[in-house]
Length: 295
Image (cartoon, rainbow, N blue to C red; front, side, top):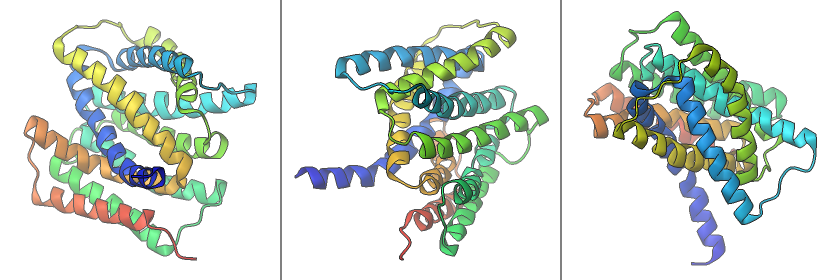
């Protein structure tokens, strides 16, 4: 197999792999949050990831940004994508919001990204693609309604979920516009360092920072470090670099259905007919959005 063929296969498989890895973060959170407060959990995770990224960056002699402005753009994108999004999701779940409800709120992201990208990045969507975005969101709603219902939503939880929604949306658009070509290793180290600095004062002010160490917690921490922060985030950077922001964000429509499937496999949570139908709708919506528009 030549290099060109291998690269094409990798690019074809990477979106599906990203959805699988990103969806598993909800499973990791479910294992870990009973033993630690949400911001402390994230801060510990970020510190571990920073150390690993620095080791890899030094070993591979990866380049660092050459200007302060470049450092700043990378840090801002990272604070939005990591600190804003993840803290919003983790705190919302910690406050009692069902993970499925959080997922459906964050699932509005592709529509919001399409609206912002059309104005800031000059990306234009055909009517077919707008239909795909709406279809995908409808599929997400079906999955969540079957799995959780709309009970358990609190004002504070909804607020943090909305924070997550706007953070991941603005972070994706900002990175695509200002630093899409960042080095995966050094750029990620800068982003996680910026995110840790953002979370640190809130962790010191609002949490006890007590950790109840257990096998489940260690497993969840390692999973989130290696599979999510190193694996899924690296894939996200590659996808943002090589695809339009709207098409990349459309892949998030598949996260709630995939999360429901993983929860069924790992925890035995049921999958009803409406959930299965929702998965099909979400997959169809993503396929419509990411298919190239003919000139």
